[in-house]
Each structure stands twice: as C-alpha cells, then as structure tokens.
Image 1 (cartoon, rainbow, N blue to C red):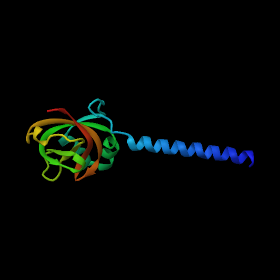
Image 2 (cartoon, one colour):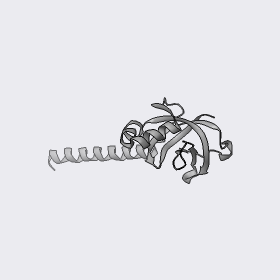
Image 3 (cartoon, rainbow, N blue to C red):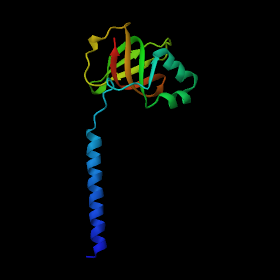
Image 4 (cartoon, rainbow, N blue to C red):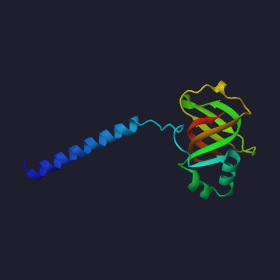
Amino acid sequence: MKKSYKIGFVAAFILGLAGVLFGLYMYNLEPKDLQKVRPDYIITAADLLKAFESDENAASTTYIGKVVEVSGILQSVKSGENNNLSIALKTGSDLSSVICTLPGNPDPSAFSIGEQITVRGECSGFLMDVLLNNCSIVKK
C-alpha cells in the first residue's frame, strides 16, 4: 500500500475518533447552573414583555440566548414534561406572561400564587409569552 494512503487512513481514523468523542461530550453535557451565573440583564416581567411587544426584532436581538433575571408576581404553577415545572409571572397583560421552566423535580407546593419572586433563566423567545428556560429561583 502506498504511504499516502496509509497517512490518509490514519488521518480519517483520528478525525472520526475525534468526532465520536465530541458527540459523546455534547450528549452528556449538563445545563449550566444559572444560580451561579451573573445575569446579562435584570428586568421586571412587565418591562420584558413590553420590550417584545413594542419591537420584537430588537428585543430578540437583545435578550434571546442571554441570561435574564426577571422579577414579578407569581401567576401560576404547572407541572410540565420531563419532571420540569413551569411558572408564569404576571405582566399586566391578560393575554401574555413570562413563562419560566425550572429543571429537575422542584416541589410545586413550595410556591404560592401572588408572591413576589425573582427568577434567572436563559431567554429563548417570544410566542405570545416570553419564554425562559433552565431557570433557577433567585429570591422568593
């Protein structure tokens, strides 16, 4: 076999092995703990909704993919899929709220409707409601 073919096979094997290892790393990667991360923005639930309603493109550029700390009054608590808990914060609008998804298996009875709460999460977009994922409770 020619020397250039051997080098090509070794290079392809190394690249394939690196791809498999990277895939395993990404598969096993756990979400970062936002309790320890400094937020990019600190805002109220009403102001966050107003930002998306007034100019969705600008708000998307500003907030999506960023860690946002939102404070507001707890409107509802629902158990979601994959043992997640979704809480909604009042925004002053009857149609929209800020929905925060808490990972893990938090106890829904630990939350009281109407209490002031501060949540830190990663903003993922706006679909009638502002969505925050991988949230953690900062202050109750």
